Length: 379
Image (cartoon, rainbow, N blue to C red; front, side, top):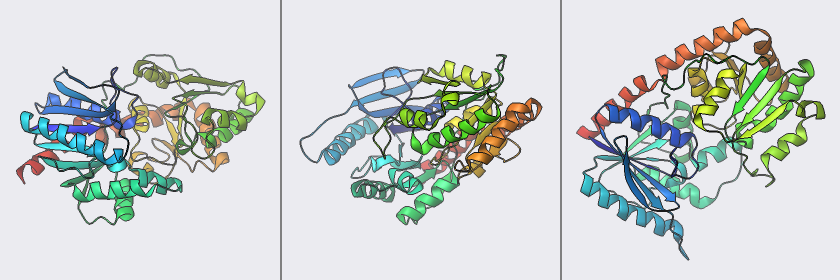
């Protein structure tokens, strides 16, 4: 079978910056190649056109084109023409696209179209309680309506998306996955009292709540040190740097024990995870976060949010703690407990990796995808 992915991001030196969506596609594509499927990845919105093959995967980087009017429609039709040409030439059986901004709205493809819900703009606007551009809602609804099959990375995302768009189609849930041989415990020495956040520095990830939480932690444990790994994003509400908003909340004493690293290469991120005493991920809006899975795979105890998808990933009190990020006092208490009780943190970390291997390892999840596409291909 020949399967293709259409995506606005992919972790590659030639690509624009990538987040969890690109990482999840990369994990899946690399595992499907090992199972002897043919894989093509189309990455749109890039700086230049480029076609190449790497580790068995055929890549098409497609340049972003700008138009004087109706660019949202004309670029989609350009992509449609480009995709259909390759679909026919390479005999692609199915193409998978994300729900984000409804990129496949107005496209009629020459193969089966599967949309996987990683979280649409409509979905995140609903979770964050912020207004949305009407055209984005329309694009996403049209794209989902026209898809042949629907997937979702979590049941919570499937249910919420169904509610938002009034969908009647079946939605199959297949989670994101992590390569447990890449993300695994290491022999690096743990740094006591070190707290790590990694991911985008953005309001929806709960980082502003984390500033309040760290003030409380630092007051109880002056040795506690917070490391923030990730790209600073302009805040959607204030149009200021989220980092600057974060620092405004911190006490002068807490600022002394804060380290910003910016974005880091994968290897260094893994090293930071390995050496941290506690991982904090207090997000308000996710579909199924790769950061959570990666930390669990590395046998780390986490303190996360308790919203929606959390129950599909975490086991509160077993793999770490799930807490409402707005409950700063309780959240801080859970972090302090894990900083103080290393035996408990290690126990929870081992439980986290055990759960990850059973439910979210690429070895398990790739088989679910193969079964799904096997059924799709026979219809």
